Amino acid sequence: MFEDRFGRVHDDLRVSVTDRCNLRCTYCMPSEPEWFDRESILTFEEIVRLVRLASGEGVRKVRLTGGEPLLRRNLPRLISMLDDEPRIESLSLTTNGLRLQQMAPDLATAGLQRINVSLDTLDPDRYKKLTRRYRLDSVLRGLDAAQKHGLSPIKINVVVLTGVNEDEIEPMVERGREKGWEIRFIEFMPLENGGTWNMTRVVTGEAIRERIARRWPIEPEPGADPTAPAARWRFVDGRGRVGFIDSVSAPFCTHCTRLRLTADGMFRVCLYDDNEVDLKGPMRSGASDDELIVLMRDAVRGKRRGGALEILEGREALPLTRTMHQIGG
Image (cartoon, rainbow, N blue to C red; front, side, top):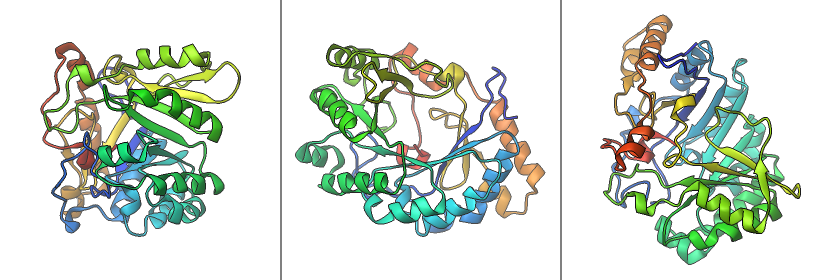
């Protein structure tokens, strides 16, 4: 098993397939990002090899991320290859939804089970301000296509920012209840390295829960996965669920089970830890499976108690050399 010195067993691997994105979300990346060279990006065969090795160490969940993963050419082929791995029980993807309308049929056929879509607003002008692109209609059409082709349940990731989209909490929940989406509210995390993050911009999950409960009674989901990043609550009237990722005010580091593989082949054991391990270099130099497994095991054993706990205690961002689009969601 991938077990660290705190007794956390890691069964969840986030695989970034590209750093490129067709949005420029202000809290995620600079307006003019620098991209990885094409040669530095892992091939499908390299990704599948590393996933297979990780599955031998207990990884059972794989989520494809980016950048924007739907920009990776022939992505359904990679999904099909991963779907053939017998020990992988859950195969999902996080996307901004811009290409979902075109790709949903092929994604479903290839074996993708479910999707998360990042969508912070339902207002077209605000969407343009947040993403630096005017594409909200494309996302909404993509969501309809995903539901039509069985990529469900659809989870909508919403980052709430003080003074930006706080007024959309109730409208977003209402749309989710109408459409059958599970809305997941995520606290604003210090990952863009532009110096704009501070605690005053964070709308806490507790504050959001209180607002929702005033309109729709909710209760904790019984039997929820204790290692999941989102605390799931269900509506008392039976019309769906809502999730809360309180990653700043109540970090889940103590039961974190996630690992990350970046698009350029770096193995990362914590979102907030720059101590990455290069897997691509040794792999391309002829490293054996056993040698690669040792590198991964050693990285997991060296995992610290959790960067989000350090942020909560210090109430300031940690210095990171990568932005979120380079790490993977």
